[in-house]
Amino acid sequence: MVSDMNEETKQAVLNYTIRLGDDAVVIGHRIAEWCRNAPFLEEDLALSNVALDFIGRARMFYGYAEELADDGRKEDYFAYMRDHREYQNLLIMELPRGDFAYTMVRQLLVDVFNLYYLEQLISSTDETLAAIAGKAIKETRYHLRRSHEWVLRLGLGTDESKIRAQKAVDDIWGFTHELFDLDELEQQMADAGIGVDNRSLQQDWSAKVKSILEEASLIVPEDSWKVKGGREGYHTEYLGQMLNEMQCVHRANPGLEW
Amino acid sequence: MVEIDQQQKFQNKIDAEIKIEPKDWMPEAYRKNLIRQISQHAHSEVIGMQPEGNWITRAPSLRRKAILLAKVQDEGGHGLYLYSTAETLGITREEMINALQDGSARYASIFNYPTQTWADVGAIGWLVDGAAIVNQISLQRTSYGPYSRSMVRICKEESFHQRQGYELMLTLSRGSEAQKAMAQDSLNRFYWPSLMMFGPHDTESAHSASSMKWKVKRETNDDLRQKFIDQTAPQIEFLGLQHPDKDLKWNDEKGQFDSGEINWDEFWRVINGDGHCNRQRVQHHINAHKEGAWVREAMASYQQKKKSKAA
Ligand SMILES: [Fe+2]
Ligand SMILES: [Fe+2]
Image 1 (tube, rainbow over the protein chains, first blue to last red):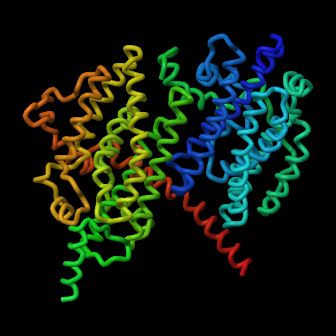
Image 2: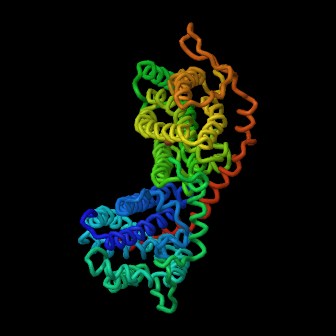
Image 3: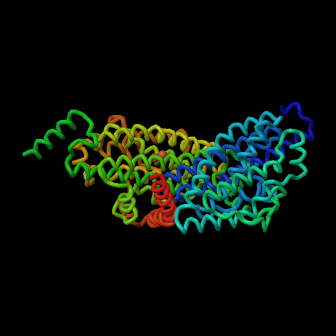
């Protein structure tokens, strides 16, 4: 219960919740970019579904942030009025949609992560976070069924699809390491039973991802490079561009109802 | 002789308001007419994803972003549904898509207009979906069973879109000066083109006579347009915006509005290629389709391999 929290905990949960909202809104935006650009109409619809899940998830997290902040900042403040240096999403979420293989491989890596992450968050001592996780995990299971199936199709489909899928795995791999980092805030939240200890997810994640990539006859890359910084607001160039576009109408006339 | 009998039986059914089903005998011209109309309708849904899709990344609130994305997704769903409706008449989706891409099939010319501001998302939902509904309610009574049933299903979602579009316009109209101006500008740009959606005057319409006899169409272009004009006028007033038609006047005797003349030159110019987006819309469809070719091939090849493995 928000009312039972001391001020310090409330701040910490707020920051933690905003991060989860950031993850969801950023990847939701990226997937939504496919709507009307997909390889065939059924996929326009399916990708839109997934994007809608993430946007809905972002609204739930930001909605909770609104409640925790209790200072007039609304869900759209968090989405639209913060700069990319204030955004704290994981970098993998902000990478451009790329080709269809890039999108689907990223989705697989993120979906497996979300699956294990949400399985833990369900037992958060924070009831609201637990409830959001309970809803989100059902969506994530569906997302993963899709991304799993697509990675198989691409890996085992044609020479071209296999080359594209492998290139995507190779190009994204270095962004997966920060999924399992824990900074001070996350450590504090994990210790309090509110957040998740991401380090504990790494083994399951690796095993599952490796088995799917092998099933798709794709090569699991060496851990030779690592890019990190999302949780500190140290982003790729892509996020600034993305937010410029996403926020432009809202910011042109700030403080209004839309 | 047999042919004449069938013609007569067919027309009797139509006259008795019995739906024609895919396996029933039908005149070739009826089949062609329906394929033309339903595929054009399907293409309109699909091409219509572009102008509104143009604002998904810039929607000014998360709520609006979700509503817009879901709406564009619905339109794609309508497209799919209508493609399968047309397929019951013996044409494939691939053939229809080819016809769209080579320009031999048309789509609603309204989508050749650019979406320039956020308010256009509202204006399209309200006016364009609104005009489509007037047409589609009438088509729920069309003589071809599968088409009639798709209209029933699609209409429900279109009404939802229209309400959301109107609600967006209402929010802007009750908002800041800038928002109100944005709403007015958008209304000014989309009002006349949405009247044009009903097609030329009945006297000029190439397909109307046979369509009416076969009850593919149930009401004429001008009658449907009048309904739309009459329902839209009070909606504009409630928004507190200026009506773009300066000649609009209530006619007590007729119980309907008299209105100004549509700029038919513009109508024909845009249909025939001079709209801002004609080439862009078709090219976008071609590009996405081409870029997706390797994905479709991969999927087919994977399916094939799975099958031969199972065998
Ligand atoms: Fe539609
Ligand atoms: Fe619609």
